[in-house]
Structure formats: structure tokens, C-alpha cells
Image (cartoon, rainbow, N blue to C red; front, side, top):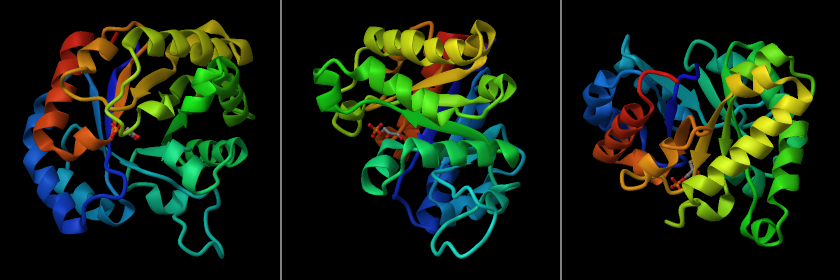
Length: 258
Ligand code: 13P
């Protein structure tokens, strides 16, 4: 039984005050939706205020990135110790971090391991760019990201991971992949690689989200697919009505867990 999970990645949007205003707008509606995990991922500086505002609701919090060390001379970085107790999830290796900030499968792996070591659940992002997609390299590329990202993790940890499959060419472009194709890569490559590294039970336990231009009008297409357990939503998570509607539709399609 995999509990579906919708997460809203706000990226570099919203000041602290704007974050508070947006959460106020969506809190009640989101809180009422059951049978699905709901995660808000605001910028670091808003985490404290948002955590306070959410209080004991069913809405969880995530961070957008994290360093793997607990502390040290790493100007500008945020450590797992700092996130512990503040949020439950942390996005690791988002394609924007890989593209603009030089993150590699190796740094992603360090961060994923550090997250588990500190009781945070990683949302590990993988996915191919347009060039790789058109060259037919998707399977090999994503499989390698999975293998290298999961180095040194036990089956127990891998069974708890959330993998976010982001075909990079579908992010912020309005051009989503098809549900069928995303489901194929998730089943064949993402779960397939986990099964090779560990076993089928672990592959079936790990949750996998689709990422890229998810909106109320296409979420049902993705959530209807058997291997897709949720979505990591960018742009549409900045609008209270859209994010709530995406979550409601996802919960409706998936029922209570599956
Ligand atoms: P969009 O939903 O805006 O395409 O962004 C996807 C994403 O990168 C979420 O992390």
C-alpha cells in the first residue's frame, strides 16, 4: 500500500509574508483532503513561519535542498540538523540544482544518505533533458541517476524514499509528458532499477511522483497510472485554488492509499 503524495515546490518564490498569506489561503482546504499526503515546500526562510502557521494540521513541510554535513564552514548552506524538527521532507537533486548549481549524482547520494540519517525523508529527483530524450537515452540516463543516487542505502531506506521523475523538458514549459510514457519510465526504469539493486518488494514500496507542468486539467491523467503515486508541483502550487484542486483530484483518483 503506497500512500499517494502531492508536494508543492515553491522554488524561489514568495517572501516570508507572502508565504504566510498563501498558506492561510490554502490551509483549510488542503487540511480537509484525506487519503493523501500533502507537502508544502516553501523557501528556507519561510519554513519557520509556515511551520508555526500549520501547527497540528495534516499538512507536512519540506525543504528544497540541504547540505550533507551537519555543520561547518559552508557559507550559505543549510544542514540536516537545522531542518530536523522543522520539516519532514527534503527535495534532493532537483533538476534546477543539477543544472544551475552543479549537483551531481554523487552529491545527491550524500544528501539522500544525510537526510535518512537525520530522520528526514528525501524526495530524490531524477529525469532526462530534451536532448537525451530525443536521442533515446532516457532509460540509461535515469537508471544511472537511480543507481548512483542510491549507493550505500539499505533496502529499508530505499523502500521509504520518494523519487520524483522529472522529464526536464516538461518543467515550466506547459509541455507535460504523457501519463502513459511517464508511467512506463517509472515502472521500467525507476522501480526496475530499485528491484535490481534490492528486490521487487522494495521497488513496490518506494513512492514515485511525476514532475512537470502538473495542473488541475492534467493531474488525473498522471494519477490514473498505476506506477505514479503523486506529483511534485511547481508553478501551480503557487496558486491556492489550483494546488488544492490538484490535491483533491489526486486523492479522488487514488482513493485512500493504494
Ligand atoms: P512546474 O510544475 O512549474 O513545471 O515545475 C515542476 C517542478 O520542477 C517541481 O519541482
